[in-house]
Image (cartoon, rainbow, N blue to C red; front, top):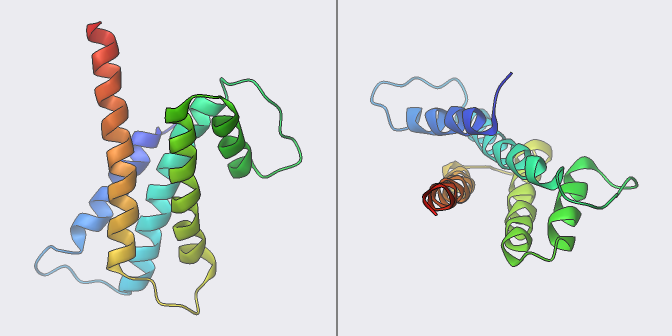
Length: 133
């Protein structure tokens, strides 16, 4: 069993390899796409764990859309903001997974990874503050 944090660590380690001297890559674009996908799924699983505890039933939509709708309908502005970030990162993940006829580069990978890292960092800070209260 793995956690969303472990998926994010995998994405971060994958990205870090791009700057290592002597790193030989068989296909950079495949690795960029894989890293972006991993970052997105770390976020998806993290937010799904929150959404699963919220009320609401959205059976007629995808699991990703269900998470987004539950976060938005929660009435919590922070959760709505996270839903918006999931929407934007999902667009990047869709480009990485399905638009193989379009280039996907290091910049897109960097952006999605940093967005997800910040969400996890902010969540860890909030947990720390809550524990200190």
